[in-house]
Length: 173
Image (cartoon, rainbow, N blue to C red; front, top):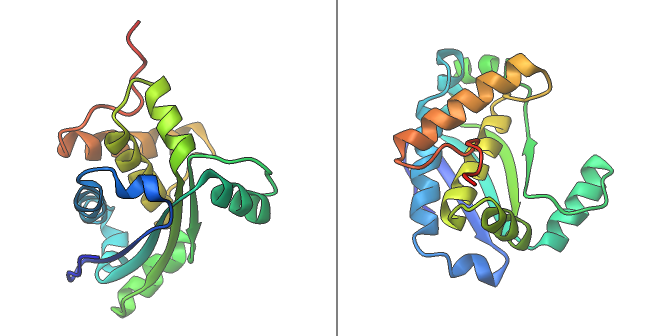
């Protein structure tokens, strides 16, 4: 875990294959810091000193979380568990106290299989999923086409800033 004044990112590796991904922790810390620095101005105060946990785990563990919290008995790539609504983050950020903003869980096998099927490097794909999950912790969502477009635009910009490919680009045939 790397500590700094902008972010306290707790990375918990609960599945051995995640531990074999070279450069994983450093990449995710860099991506998380960049994501927080790129939030809209009203959310920036809540990002200062923010704390979150990223659980890199098994498909089974994510399936259990997906069942228990979303009523879907199947694994998925990433789940986010925000502690606050966006409007509350804006209010709480004005107080200046560090906030625990939530948790993200990423399933190894599901994510690795998805990356392979989409012709992506696993490290790039998990970086995108962490960015996506972190944006959810700060109130972004994709429930409407407009909100999805804004969220995807920011995700693409963040990935490009990191020198990584557009995560939404169609596969080349």
